[in-house]
Length: 168
Ligand code: ADP
Image (tube, rainbow, N blue to C red):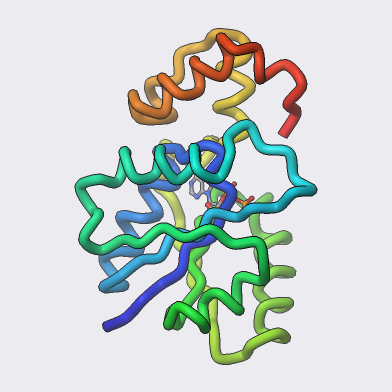
């Protein structure tokens, strides 16, 4: 059985992330979604809230997905959980530089774990969790960016006034 590890902030999960999950499941039998917990990185949602949204929107894939959190190196998790590859999504050339550095850093740490890059559908190539948060701040329509359940959670944060201090 081939297992892939898809790490990210997922703050919140978007249709772009979901597109990558669906593509990855055509290659891997099992996918571990690794939600990063980085106390130095300000997030809108807590790790528990991010996991809850992932569980909701990927309920139809739940047999082939596991969700974990991570506060350590991704390669360490991959090895511990039996994943052979790290999966990352590519949107545009702007993602390349960062992913290039990360891949080589990961290889230096553990050469047995390789990375696989999947290109998103062009309609999601402009989409990021950051743009979702920015659009929500100005009450814009989120329906083409995130599933209805995630829209509700983002709106809830907005109503609670949690978004004004958030830049990323
Ligand atoms: P990170 O903080 O690790 O970049 P993100 O949640 O922003 O976490 O992204 C996780 C992964 O999903 C990254 O590989 C990113 O390139 C990819 N990703 C994010 N948004 C999209 C999208 N719209 N289409 C395809 N891949 C995406």
